[in-house]
Image (tube, rainbow, N blue to C red; front, side, top):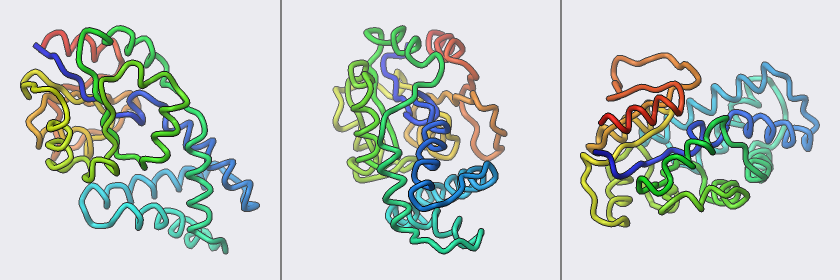
Length: 228
């Protein structure tokens, strides 16, 4: 029986793809850059790449945040200050929030039935601002952001530090739900949790990271939780 849910934030509860696009457009406008669709798509690919460097402990958070914009600007031969663009983007990203369709209904259904903990690798100031602009905290028992915790998903250290801050629980009664195989699912497997890969974007599977369960909708997640 499941008693505890660890929920990823971006692309699990909040629509990060939309938030990222809107923030990039506003940031680019301040630097007289045209937010062409191909440039936004390329940024998304670079961003995913550098965050995996963080997950694999091959670069620090401070390095990857600027690196993604430096790589993008160099690739397109654009002369702009990568650090300044990064700072502006993060300010814009922290403005407001977008729930994924169905997320609020899902939260309403699980609130009170399970202990709910948010686990995010995002930058603390950005996540605090986005969460603060929403009613998300009213659903949660606690919020764990890696920058504040002092370790990043998928490291065992991240999860152990989270476990130490919550009431005693059994790992076999806990599940992590997230969209990232490399962060959420790998981390959950390493930590001994049940894992549900929320594959609502229909991402490609990986042979080296196999989730215990896969769901493409919140209804499927609910069904899986009830059957574990």
